[in-house]
Image (cartoon, rainbow, N blue to C red; front, side, top):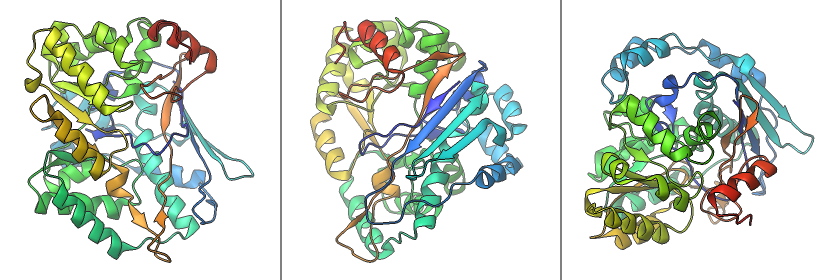
Length: 395
C-alpha cells in the first residue's frame, strides 16, 4: 500500500483512537498486502531556517517501542478493541525498513512507507508528529509559551459546546498536547476527550476517533470504485456491529456518499464527520438527507474537524443549534498555535503536511474531497474517480 504526503492549505486533519490517528483502531482488521504511504513537507516561509535533518536514525529508534502491560490493559477496555486485535498489537513492532526518507537540495522532505496495510498504517501518526517536533528543534524556532497559555485560556472560556483535542499529527511537541489535554479536562466540562490514546489513558479521558479516508480509499481498489462507501460501511458493520459509528463522507464527495447512505445505514451509524467543503452546505445536505429518510436529525451528530479555530467552531455550532447535534475536533489550533518568542506579533507557523494512501497492490488510489482543487493522487486516476463520482465534472 502506498501513502503520500501532500501539501494542503492550512487544514487540520486528524484524529486518533485505539492506536491509530483518524481510525477507530480498525487497522488490525485489514491485512491486505502491498501498501505504501508517502509524504511531502514544504519549506516554511516564516523566517526560520529550513529543517536540517530528518534521519533514518530517528525512525530506527521506533523499532524498540512495544505495548506495555499497562497500555494493553487499558486498550482491552476500549470500545471496538477485540482480543484478536489486541494479541496482534501486543506483538507488533515498527519495521524501519518499510520507511524511505529523502530530502532534496531545497529541503523538501519526502517519506514513503511500503508494506502490508495493517503495518504501514501504524506509521502515519507517529511519523508526522516526529517530523513536526524535529522541525522546530532543528530550526531553533522558539515559541512564546506565556502567550500560548493566555490564548489557550481564552479559547477554553469561549468553547461552550462539546469539543475534543484532535492535534497529535501536527502538534508542536508532546509537552504542548499533554498540557492541552490536562488543562481542558480540569477546567471545562465541555471537553469530551482526545484523539491521542496515550494521553487519554494517562489523563482518564475518552479516546475519540472516526473512520479514516484511507479506509474508503483502499476499499475503492479492493472492492469497488463505483461504491466504495457502501462496501466500506458494510464491512465495518460486520466487524463493529454498530459501534464506532462516525462515518466520513467526503472521500469521493458528499453527493456520491449520500447515494449509498441508505435508511438502514443512516439509522445504524451515529453520525458523520465534516472534513472539507463549506460546513453550512454540508449541514444542510446531511439534515435534508436524514429528513428524506424519515430520520430525526436531532438524534444524529456531525463532528467537525476541517481546519477549525474557535471562531469558526462557534459559528458552526450556532448554525447547527436545534437542527442536528454537533461536536468539534480541534487540532493544530490547539496543539501548535504559537507566536514567535522573538516577536509576539508574528505567528510561528505550523507545518502543512499529510500522509495519504497512494497505491494498493500496485493500483493507484485517490481522494477527491468536497473542497475544489484538493483532490489527491495520480492525475489520471483522479480523472476516472471524478468521472464516476462527480458526474463527469473534471474540474
